[in-house]
Length: 160
Image (tube, rainbow, N blue to C red):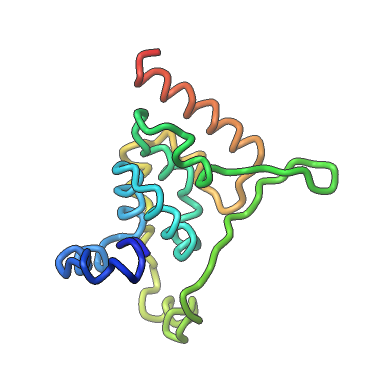
């Protein structure tokens, strides 16, 4: 889907790109797509690799250039709705290409790699102020704070 769907994938397929993409840190790929304003590719990564990416969602979204209108990527932004009388963040609609193989499950991964590397750590080394937005359970308060900071950041960068 990142290549444009099955009807054009054969024409756009690039073996070198695929080799690099397959071996690259998934969080780095997501950040790169954000910096390139490749909204569709980022949507696909969030949908099919959510467990790896969604804890870093706000940090990744912070990498969209200020020249990219938030309207272009609005469906990637956290949304809230009222449930049981309180505002709640809607979960991202994750999907799977296929069922996980036994060797991809946590017990096996931990046997092979007892100390799993944090693939998103680099995001916070260069932007430590984003660390507070790293979470698997995004709260209304944290999302609101991020929206305010992001709006200020866009305004500052665009000299408005």
